[in-house]
Length: 238
Image (cartoon, rainbow, N blue to C red; front, side, top):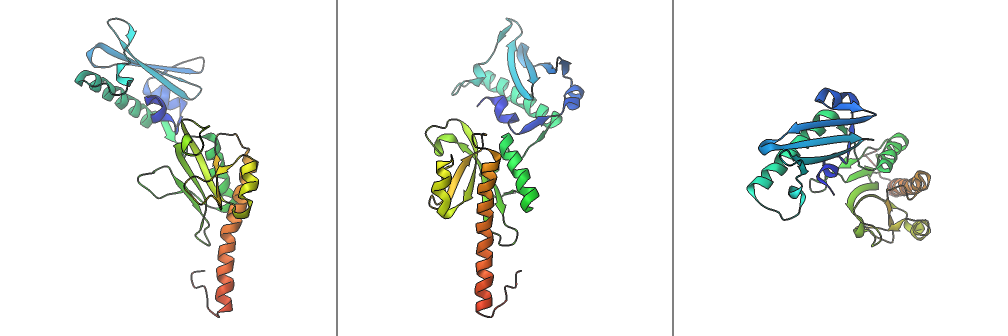
């Protein structure tokens, strides 16, 4: 993943903020340049919500991209990369807002879950800051989790970074694996499936799986209440 993609993958540009920052607009494309140290110039373009950039050697008019190569060292190259990254991070801070997730489908489904079940994602781990857990407010059981990870961890036919959702289907796992879900990553494959959120499966099909998972999180609560009543006890936390 490029430096630009990594910094802006969860960000949405605000056109008026781009103009305030100093970008010039032409044909719905925004252009910006800034002189860096040592005679270099950063040129930035935002088109269709995607930022691309390059660093030019002002003396020769050629692109200076050695700082993008893995394993390249040197004080000068390091300073160029740092200055360029600082510029990109400042543009991100001043001209964009951050989405919860980087894929459109993950954000659509998260909004749907919020409206239907009143559940907002909980980001529980510092090591995995973009893993969002959705919890049944009554039973406090998870019914979905969205994660960003390397696609090859889910399947050898996936490459690059992907966002996925895990949901609990129990005896219906095989049914939905046949429909395009994957055996679960990092959870019990007999009960959970992993859904890749790249629009390869429709929102409606995924919503069906989320409904099943939520219903199963409800059943655990109902079973607990039934057992309490059987013993003549009161579920005090209700």
